[in-house]
Image (cartoon, rainbow, N blue to C red):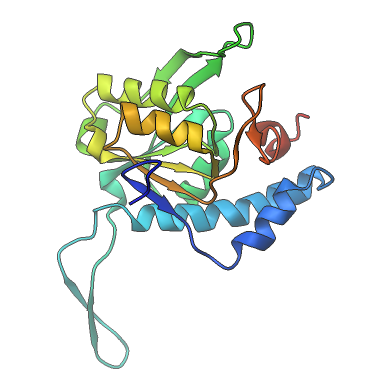
Length: 219
């Protein structure tokens, strides 16, 4: 258990140092950034799915030589929700691992005209039966926590229990984790990195810049 958030999982994978060195480097080309970011997010997506309480009852299958008893994840019981636009990059990796998974979209933007940069909800499109599913909330960056909380608020408003939400992100910081711990401690957070903190402009340090702009080459 972390003192930053009571329901936090931080990835431990030997590939992460190499991948983060690539994506954090401001000289990495847009095509290379997309390539290494997809590799990183695929690892993150696999670990996020593995943390869902969705394994079936023990299932025995026949192998070419004998039998094996295990379990599997049922994608029909999952909904992947992206916070547009950067979250769409991670959503793509989740969908590649869970073919046929239902998808939701939430558009939230920070009001840059205000020093506190509050998050504002502009659009939400969610499946009608989302309240009965486990939800993977996708957004690569957790900075102040405002956008994530606004997205979780939208999910709760349609009946999704906070304990059924797993927030998956590439990079987060202590400020955002503490804010989510105060608002939604039941939401599980799966992240690949906890960075140092926020600067005066509310950007993550050391961070990696604007994830959506770099991934979609709109810098």
